[in-house]
View 1 (cartoon, rainbow, N blue to C red):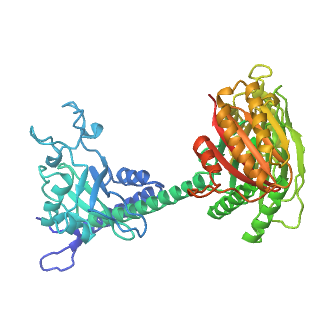
View 2: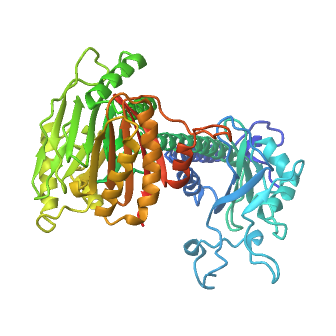
View 3: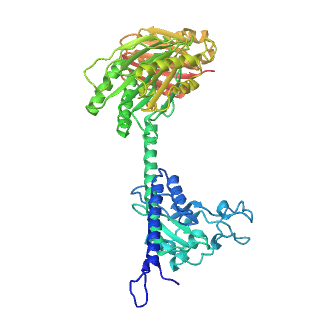
Amino acid sequence: EPADRDAGPVAAGHPGAEEPDERAERERRGGDRLRFVGAATRRIARGVDLDETVLGLCRASVPAFSDAILVYLRDPLPVGDERPTGPFLLRLRRTDRLPDYAAPAPADADPSDTGEFPLPLLAPQPEGVASGTPELIEVRGGGPLAEVLRGVRPVFGDAPTVREALPELLGPAREIPAGRRAILAPLRGRRRVIGAAVFLRRPDRAAFEGDDLLVAAQLATHTALGVDKAVLYGREAYIADELQRTMLPDELPQPTGVTLASRYLPAAETARVGGDWYDAIPLPGGRVALVVGDVMGHSMTSAAIMGQLRTTAQTLAGLDLPPQEVLHHLDEQAQRLGSDRMATCLYAVYDPVAHRIVVANAGHPPPVMLHRDGHAEVLRIPAGAPIGVGGVDFEAVELDAPAGATLLLYTDGLVESRHRDVWTGIEQLREKLTDTAGLTRPDTPPPLEPLCDEVLDILGPGDRDDDIALLAARFDGIPPSDVAYWYLDPRAQTARQARRLARRALERWELADLTDSVELLVSEVVTNAVRYAERPITLRLLRTDVLRCEVGDDVPQLPRLRQARATDEGGRGLYLVNRLARRWGATRLSTGKVVWFELPMP
């Protein structure tokens, strides 16, 4: 057996002597190895995700370094400092140039073309023995495979320990190749062993040499670090996606009188989070608040600030404050978060009964209204200062919101890029809406979901410089014939009067089957309002897909459901409402509160 080349030349009587031709050949082969390692590590390093990294190892190794390769990775792969739980499992992640037993190649086929690797250890097994290599392997503690992986350094396949370890990877029925035609290289990341690679050579090719262990070590090290990087990047991308997903609505509500659709696009695959957000918040009286905002930047910090501002906007909407007051409080909140926390926001409240919309703007691009006749217009709304500037007033504008019209709220990423200014983009958006409306029949608004997709088509190559949030609202409205509204003085006879008015409205709507339930619940809610109110109370019935009843008064304290004792004279009104109504609730207003309940249509 000739000595390894890395052991140095030895000549009898002339220690250290070496022929010039041998020295030149040794230097040439050493240079070839260095060039191969450099090219291979660059190819492995180009991988961004896990599959690209492992594929880079396979493509770099086969056939330049080995004739076949098997790559095993830990299952599951630990992330960062995470401590793996459960047994040490290796899963076969990828192979290259191994035989396909499901589709055997023709006898006269060239093995280099079919990928078949004619080694004894990979030859088809006798009948009754499973063919192929096992996909999932449990590494036994203290076993030969665990000992090789713990040693970290690559080892030849003819080493005694490796000859015992390879069957754990390749299957116990496999025959191990003779000589140095296999290298088992552990893959060690920054914290622990994360897998193993097996390099194989054919019998008609020179066996591995001592220097090849150094090559295998370089390939294994760069692959392991690349896998670590890919896993960390995947976890970071997952966290970013989850953060953005939880910051935005899982699904839009379906309030009465308006249809909603939305889109969100991150700035790029490498920056999946940003400061853009949208929201739709149901309000008392069938109204809905439409919000779109944009925090400067598209980073984790921007997303965190966006989440705080969105939560603040939801809380303020629950108080039913006017749009300009909501922006004022958002401005104060942004200043509390930091002096450089800037954002733009547009806040609108749509009333489907009055067919009106109230809009306030804080430095945001103006909304675009697509009318039923196909005409699109940019709404004239005072721009206002961005949120976070401080010391500025915001102005609200009330506009008509006719049935069939569509309001489009968006962030500047849709209309502004390095190739166009914001006003040019807004004009392109207006023209796109007009063209899309022309594809449908006259006086028929285009479907909302396809409309959002068409709007995003105005983005050309290279226009994705910023996040994009898009919220579209189709105004359906509630016709006056489906609304009954009364002012009632807070007197002892008011509950009886409310029952009579509700009964007449139900008769007019041909909903007599609901009369008993409505009269009972209206009587209970109105009685509670009359007990404490000092000004006239309001009673409103809305007929939509459900029957909704709303009672408003000037007392800000919200009612609380409680279990009345047998000796109590009161406290059972809300209990009846909770048992009989499909849904119910109470909302605090700036002038008092509204208690409402809903009953399903018969």
